[in-house]
Length: 427
Image (cartoon, rainbow, N blue to C red):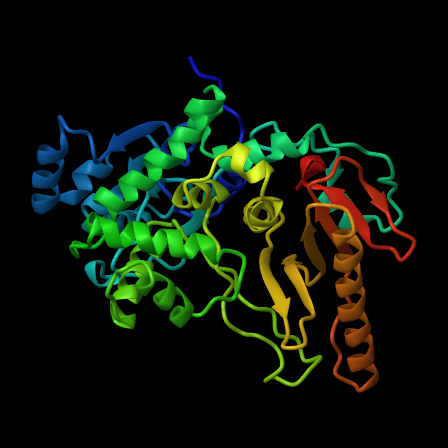
């Protein structure tokens, strides 16, 4: 039997089940939602079981509550096959009045018009991302984000990552899909390509019943991949798609991107807009990001060998990898991620917010002189915040300045900026 590698979501889910009636786990296909949920469930209903689906759907038409019978927590896998189950779960939670009754999983977001009640107060939502480097045992986890926030004097100097640049590129190409971890190099990289094929040939249309052209979807994914970790506008994407002999208007492009959002293939990063410059100076559009860097690699038909000789391109993919990991780690800490960028070119690739108001300004740099550039950006933003506070704008100062690198050694700069290899990090 394949070994289960614990996810940060395990502890979060276990805690949630102590204070809410039902928990919905969402996320892309192949990310391990069912496997993780099964470890916490005492009975299981798999709505997509080919031997039972007709019977399940017939039961739903007559009395959906029958499908909820079983020892709790009861897992209802891919519940969106029969959206009325949502309302049945909500009603059952109200009726029983206890916690930890149901776990729902789903790989697509549901059209809310198909359900009667939002589930607020009864059904909590959890996002399961592809595995972070720490969860997949690629990061040695010798540096904790929690410790960096809690102890400004903690010594990280000389702590080393086990990942070479070649290793790091391979982890990005392979992605955080659990099924890749016991595969050889060639097979593990093929998983992301198969995932991409599945999106284009089937999922892009089945997600909401709207027929979409697989060739168009491939072109859009390639265009999106060329613009990851940027603030590329819809027009930029549209122009890029048109340059590849695909005639498309903005409404159609939006429909395709919405389908990718519903499938949890893309999850863009929102802007952080503190009152340190005029509102018109700070960029407020979302930053383009895939849920996992391997999707960009597959969409661009890249390989570890090609990326090793094109570190400029890998720099953008590296940022997607780091954003993925920080989303995983911040979920454990009850936080979230955003970015800062203004029209003067000053940026923080990531702003990691904790639920107690503390936050970190972070830049992602593969290494070398780029680290100095990243540190200067972070210090400049901090300087702007201090200046804004002199003008009585009352903006909280950052609790941590950090450059996350693809290098092998951690250290603290004289200016206080922490330099941390992604291969050393954990929550």
